[in-house]
Amino acid sequence: MVTALHSNDIKEQILELKEKRNAVILVHNYQVGEIQDIADYVGDSLGLSYHAKKAEAEVIAFCGVHFMAETAKIINPSKTVVLPDKDAGCSLEQSCEGDKLDSFLRENAEKNYYVIAYINCSAHVKALSDCICTSGNAVKIVESAPKDRPILFVPDQNLGSWVMERTGRKMDLWQGSCYVHVEYTRESILKIREEHPDAELIAHPECTYAVRMLSDEVCSTEKMINYARNSKSKDLIIATESGMLHRLKKEVPEKNFIPAPTQNCACSECHFMKMNTLEKLRDCLYTLEPQIVMPEEIRARAEEPILKMLSLSA
Ligand code: 13P
Ligand code: SF4
Image (cartoon, rainbow, N blue to C red; front, side):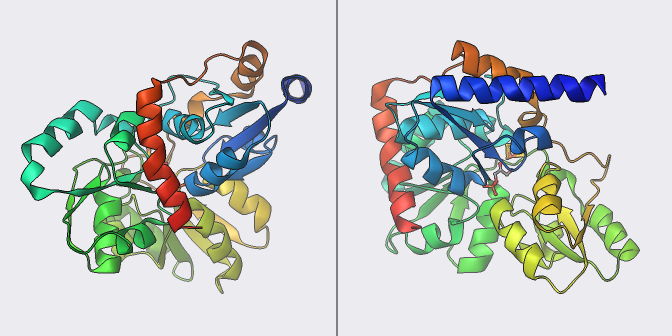
């Protein structure tokens, strides 16, 4: 009871500060339920990018991970963008450092790569890319790439190989991966499918080939909502970060959602996503720190491939 009162107090403080700061609260599907419930918009990386671009409020409080808030700042630079916890990173972003990609492209200059970067990367990597994609539009972005140039896809090898399967287009893949999604294995998925033989299984494309092969649908977090709503199955097994279950249960209450187990635990939590809390959201609205800042030269170069993505997938 004390905890409930406490969190209600914090929610009121957040709403007051939101008003005072003229802020909008954008939230990713993997955030804890209480942050999702206070959002102006909850969605996947693509939906969040569109909302960040058109945001008119003076402040964008971005509850997600750093690359998402950074993307918001890149495409709507006159806004103050705050992220409740500045250390909320991403293993995919960490797997592809801008300097390493820069050296790789220089060493392979004769290839004249068309670089497609999954949005889970730094501003520096975006600035070195020709077009950005998300899991929601990767197939479309790859299909629209010039046919006469080889594609380098960074940083997620699993999303990249799924797109190759879907499009038949060969690409060179950077060897990054999401530390959460690679924890699902063939064995852990076979076991849960055996326990729920009538359930459909939906997996995120950051999962490995072995897991994707055992799934009924592979899609972005946003598309999971529609798929679940329209599925004929009453039970659905979800192979993605646990925060997704909050929105699925809320928006599709007539279905049962079963979190897919990983090999070593049943947690499926992205510790980066879970660094944001209601308290930190309140504090960042109060202090307007930590703020997303970056050199203008990088921002301007990173903006182009993001805008290209937004116009290609509109
Ligand atoms: P979505 O764009 O599908 O929400 O995925 C983002 C992400 O970080 C998945 O791990
Ligand atoms: Fe990055 Fe994986 Fe966390 Fe998504 S779930 S933010 S890809 S580490």
